[in-house]
Figure: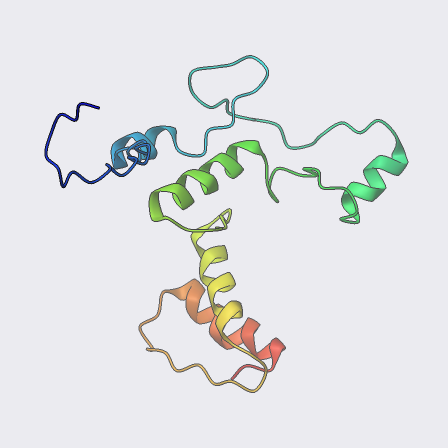
Length: 145
């Protein structure tokens, strides 16, 4: 038997396959969350509809009752908005996200997520007018002072 190499040679460890590098932040900002339609467009399609078609009245009723997971009205959500949410989640490394139709909707949603009945919110008198309206007229309806 003929042995070549050092007598104390140790067996080499198997190299683990290298995982692909995560996409660069710029790539994620442009392509993250994209959901191509059956037409395989190069950029996400813009869904400029307000409503959706249902096969039957029962199917529509189930969608509106939340039994079926379907888009029902574009102000509540649509594929374009979902791609936007998915892209922001990819950029931020977030598990889930939400988008609103306006900045005031975002402010109100954030306040309702943080405040509970019996809480007291302290704010500046210099609040933006719509924010002040939410704090002085809408939140009190929920028992928030």
